[in-house]
Image (cartoon, rainbow, N blue to C red; front, side, top):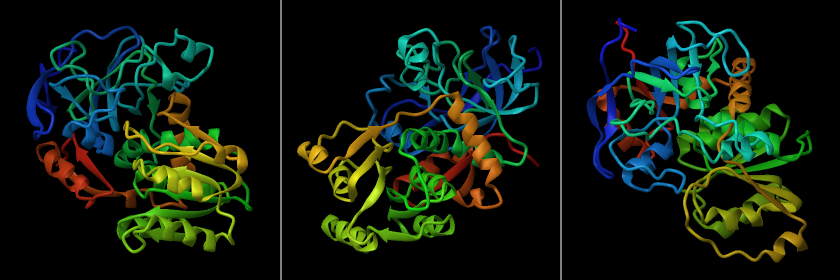
Length: 374
């Protein structure tokens, strides 16, 4: 590791609500057995990054600054300590591109008995670790990155661009996890998706590929156009139909009074919950993947029994979902123009501007170019 620089440039949250600062952060010289050091290529910005930087931290993220955000990142393997394969057994060599998950312990009940590693009680988050404590670079908005020994590193297929793989390493892997937990889908299935962010858009692609009819509710118009390009049969612009009751009526009209067999809540808005329940067909399923806050809602649970509705939620994903997400991208790249989700490329020095554009809904998915070429 003598050829490495001693420090990596990184965008650091030094105080909640303040712009990130570009600082020099120590690069670890010793790797744990099974760990990987990456030269990061591209990191995409997730809405969760924006919320945390602003101080709206979910319960699952208890850390205080200074730390590095960014959990959607593609890196090139620079060094590895006793690593010969990725998390699913594919050969892994120096120079290969990888994406990765949080570090799951593999020894708790959720990891071993329940086989739900995203609920691991001892997980080591892939972002937000202190820049003053080993491994220093737990966060994607940095030139170098540290992948924990149980961090679920998965090789990126050659035909997928860095930015698309980065975006999929959060949004699509979560959608893959959610899709696998939802009821079977066929040509008669109607899926309503609430929210037109990356989670919602990737949900469009996954359910369209399965043969379902997909209706998306959200905005702004740029995202709705992408949803239609990816196969949504109908879109509902919340700016044009601002009333929840009007949106419910419109969905009922579009589905001959029934509603959706599956409603996917990917909006991140707590108020969408009660609206979404009204859009479910009797006997349908409500799948919640876009909630990361503690805002309560008023709900009558008798609706579940009177209409035979089921509700399920999904948190993040494991390495198996990461691999399936990469495979889905690769197999369907001729059907979906994945790169159309990436709305800009910025250098690390301009990351705060990218965050500002996310806050103002000007971007779908900005990409931070960490390795400058030419």
